[in-house]
Length: 115
Image (tube, rainbow, N blue to C red):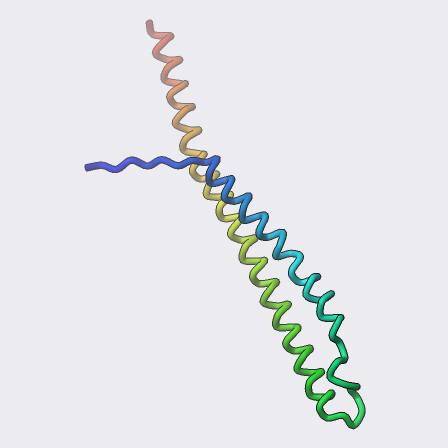
C-alpha cells in the first residue's frame, strides 16, 4: 500500500517564526547576564593585593562568566541554524508543489488547445 505525503507549508513557516521568537530571547540573554553580573562584581574582595581569596575567586568568577556567555551564544547560534533549516525545509516542500501545479496548468492548457 502506497503512502501519501503532504505538508502544511504555512504551519512549517509558522513554526519557524516561533523558533525565531525564541532566538530573539536568546540574543538578549548575554547582555542581560552581563548587566546582572555587574551588580555583584567585586563582592569577593579586592584583587591584586594580598587577599588570596579575592585573587582566586575573581579569576574563577570571570572564567564562569565566560563559560556562561559562550554557552548562551552557542545556544543562540543553534536556534538560528534551526530557523534556517526549518525555513529551508519549507522551501524544499513548496518547490515540488509549485512544479506540480505548473505541470498541471501546462498540461491543462495543452489539452484545451487539442480540443
